[in-house]
Amino acid sequence: MYGVNVLNQSAALGLMAVGITFTMVTGGIDLSGPSVMALGGILGAMVMREGGPLVIGVIVMVLFCMALGMLNGFAVAYLKMVPFVVTLSMMYISMGASIWLTREVSISVPPAFVKALTFRILGLPFPVFLFFAIAFLAFGLLRKTQYGRWLYATGSNPTVAKILGVPVEQVVFKAYLFSGLFAGLSAVVTTARLMSASSKMGSEGVILNVVGAAVVGGVSVHGAEGSVLGAAIGAIFITILENMMNMMQVSYYLSLIAKGSLVVAVVAFDCWRKERFYYKRG
Image (cartoon, rainbow, N blue to C red):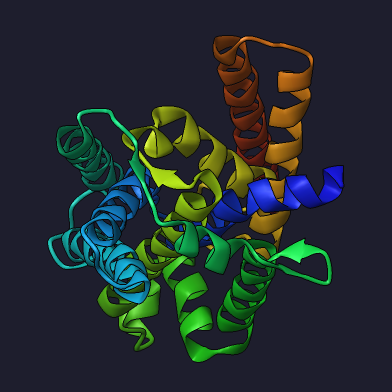
């Protein structure tokens, strides 16, 4: 039962970790995923609260998050803005909008929505199956398609990739679009699991979990390396780590220190490994 609960908790985090993998492989990053997810969940919950069909609420969540992902992608790919600055700004814009819309009060969703998204198949909640399905589809997209090859080529050296005919701008734009899509799916899963939507769903601590899941799963901050399956496994690991600290009654702030230290250690090892590799080649 504990394993099922861990998988259920890691589903939303895993979906966002898969999304951020696309942007990190290009050599960029998307810090806005959790706050975009929260804002999308709030808007969808508001639609359902006003009597809108459940399907429309889900569509609003997904399409709105995709739209913000497209804005990030346009700014990074075509306006040549720095990914860190663009997505950090989007993170605070979305966070501010979430707090303004809700006044920091949770918005409940209809019981029918919760029931439709939390039913079990062979003893496993539906979000777990969605998480696994998305992870394997994304894995196939990155490893078995031309777009996936272009994505890694762009992350390795965008100038050379462009010379070789890779549409670098389109590749980067789509990476942030996918990140928004997975944030939208995470909004659906998270809202159903919590039975409500609130600005707290996208707190700063969540982005640390998302980045931590990706880097622990082997996604390089330098780009061109990493797998969505690794990021998915990283999400499960981070969820287990967080649960262990909760059971040990570690304070929230100490848990942030622990997870932040873990991310720094993994990134430092990645930098050391790359420097050693290039030194040997030289």
